[in-house]
Image 1 (cartoon, rainbow, N blue to C red):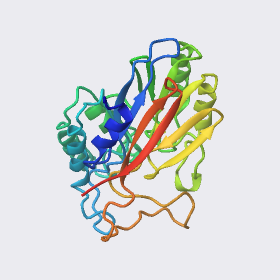
Image 2: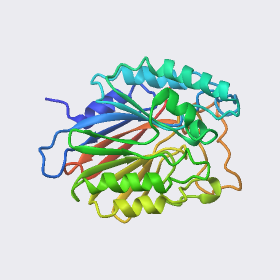
Image 3: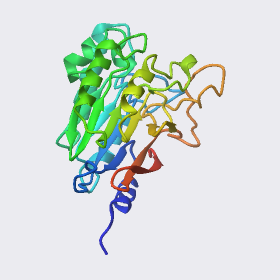
Image 4: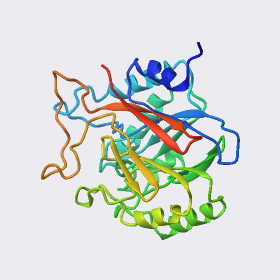
Amino acid sequence: MPIDRRNFLKLAALGGGAVFASRLAGAANAPYDDFYFVQLSDTHWGFNGPKVNPDAQGTLPKAIAAVNALPEKPDFIVFTGDLTHTTDNPLERRKRMGEFRDIVSKLDVKEVRFMPGEHDASLDNGKAFTEFFGPTHYTFDHKGVHFIALDNVSDPAARIGEEQLAWLKSDLDSQPKDARIVVLTHRPLFDLAPQWDWATRDGQAAVDLLMPFRNVTVFYGHIHQEHHKTTGHIAHHSAKSLIFPLPAPMSQPKREPVLWDAEHPYRGLGFREVEAEDAGTKYSINELPVRG
């Protein structure tokens, strides 16, 4: 009996690691050409906090090993921000980015794409990130799906900015209204918890531009936990972190990392599998934990 994609992903996930596997469909009027990609988020390379994660230098390599062990290679991999942990020292920032780049070079996949988080880009408007990883925002197409990577972190005020919004509008103007569109961001585009910096000040402007399109899904990071939100018909799904979990939005006075639980190591860190259904208009999401 042949194994279907969902069962394949569940079997592949048993090895652990923090990965996001997504199966997507082609454009509405095109043949259903399925594929999957891997998303990793919030690795915070350079973080040091034994009370929060005593395996801070080991979790990312574990995830890479898990991805490389997948019996079917993903079409591509995307890191959705906070590749490194923030530092005021420009030399240290570049050192961490170089170390991160060297570690992820061990990924056995044809294509790896990167996006910045505020830890990577807000102190120098993305200068160091661009030197190591290229543009902070871009688009690409893969098997009938149009991907848009937005930068809502290089501006320390947490704005996308008028110039990038004009770029987004121009890109969307070239897409049919039934296009399959996946948007990748670091911060949420909606106001999840502005007091905790879990928002994009002009995110609604981007959502408004996306609203005329019938098949839009947004994947983001930043909040270090699973969260699902719908704005109109647009679904937003956040990814867990590879370094430490954060509390539920506004569930306590301060936004502080959840402490490491020695009896339940890696609790709150995890990965998910997402399977597209109904020719890519619906997504079945299954969250799975990181294993030591």
